Length: 396
Image (cartoon, rainbow, N blue to C red):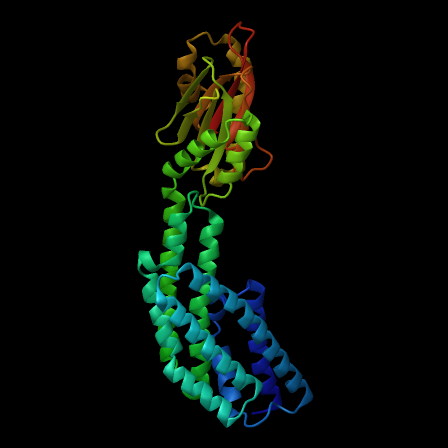
């Protein structure tokens, strides 16, 4: 093999390892389309006997790659530790992690000191602690809800946070891909690049990742209404000394973390008779507290995909109500539905709250930063009355 070809093999692998390091772990997205890069690396190192390449530029690239692999291994060891600790009740996770770590150390020895002895020991380790077998074991565990760390973590998370899901999605992707990397490297070194093992493990990881994607979509839908109801109960009962704005901000902080594409209005106001709401089914939750505050959470399911024209139309329709409201004389309780039907037709929520009740309106998950939330709100006067009201319209 020419020195140019050798250097290309090392550089291709180095680029891939750098992609892993930038992600902070092994990454299936990066490895799945570049398996030949690792089989070629394994095959190349398998041909080295008793020394690393002598040509200066190849030697430098080789030693740099070794250093990068050590950095990546350190990062993965931390991920494996988190996995073992979280699933300490199941010894199979510890066994898979320990064997993956052992095989990795033998692989690093073969890279640092390529010779018949180190390469032979790596081969023995792969036979006794097969990365393919451990990949299958890990995926079998992940297929069961009770032994899937992501499902366990999300069940324990009262607020079904995006960070919880993505943390475990990343840890598990890294673990599965680590085993795929080891299997692919060993195939290149010992099996003349017969891709039976890597391709089969790759397909199983793809299926597992599809299940993770499906689970993400399920969490985005199924958080409502129970997660938000439980959150409101806690906020109301644990923060009775908070003012309305403080409560609204606390709720806003929590809702921003929930795994969903929905966008929210958070409305907190003092208890009063001067309020009325109309909302489509299953899109708002209310809560009252002994301290005298009321909370309304409205979720818009379509605001995230609303066109710019829809946003501007919503604002225009609500602002036009300022002038029209001077002619409205019907009962307060009937107004929201009437406004929705006749004046703000792309809304799924309309609320009227008397302005003098310390009304606080915030939004969470707002994809249009210049708007006031998933819809629009303004101040109006009803008929000839001097009292002013907040008119809040939530997009469908």
